[in-house]
Length: 285
Image 1 (tube, rainbow, N blue to C red):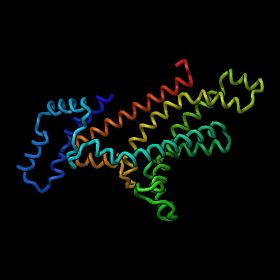
Image 2 (image 1 turned 120 degrees about the vertical axis):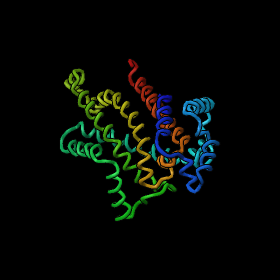
Image 3 (image 1 turned 180 degrees about the vertical axis):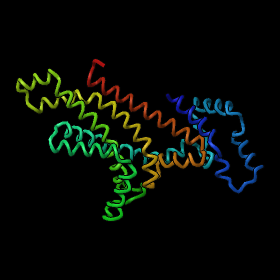
Image 4 (image 1 turned 90 degrees about the vertical axis):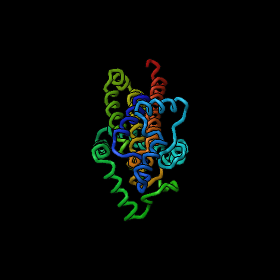
């Protein structure tokens, strides 16, 4: 999967018009531009560039940024902490809120219908709409929270809360459906008929419903990573997401390729952790 991801990005970037040299040296003559491209190896055939890239990758070398001329690892490292803080905070909000809404939804009644409406809203309304409304209410009108920046934990509240809310919908929906299904199993009905306390019934049902929910948590971790691009641009956070956005605009191939590799690796790691957790909960897997 990693090889497929980096290969697709490698060739897709080079099919697009323009390059980093043209972006960063607008006032240079055509001869100077061609000289710079030659020095950076951009005039070589794609097969040669691709082979060189794979060789560098095998040696753990992610290359040099075409715009800042710094090692890609250094460029990414500077931006990594704000993105990690946002991703982990949003994932915590999504997991907590998703579990809570899923359990309330499975109970039914007016409270369950309210939870269903919140789940539907989180999945139906685009994230950027909620983000704009949150900024207007909490930053512009009430002036409780800052609308941009990443210099303090307070700047993390608004983006993490809005991103976590929209991620929680899928978690809640899957958990709710599996809880309802678990309560209808014959052994659960038998345990209920024998007078097992409701808290023990819920404990058994929750353990059963948690297994498929873990897979959704892994998928949502990948969704969070891709969503940071939009979030960090909207809230002016200096993280990996905004770096990816700017690097695509600048055609900074090495940075985009490295961030793609990072994203794919994170997604695979999340799936691996999910599989391990499922095996711990259910040894039959």
